[in-house]
Image (cartoon, rainbow, N blue to C red):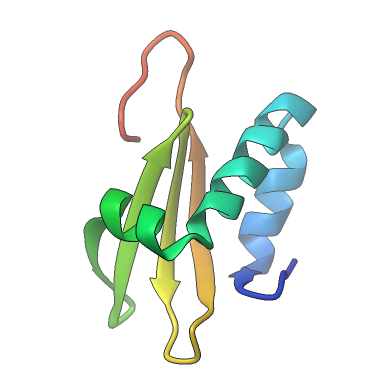
Length: 91
């Protein structure tokens, strides 16, 4: 699954397909926000090094997304999580 700026790994794409439609819409909304450089810089959190790459995370609207900013200006999403409506937290 790809857009002009966001690459989603195959395991994450399969995971997203398993969510119900309303959750998929929330994920799509956060992915759209990820493209906005000012918003991203304000909201991203250092998730540390994963597989030797600097990984960032964003939590918005019950969605947590971990991603890598690639050298060509694209993003690769390696993790998506929907937080509980009843027990919201980062993960």
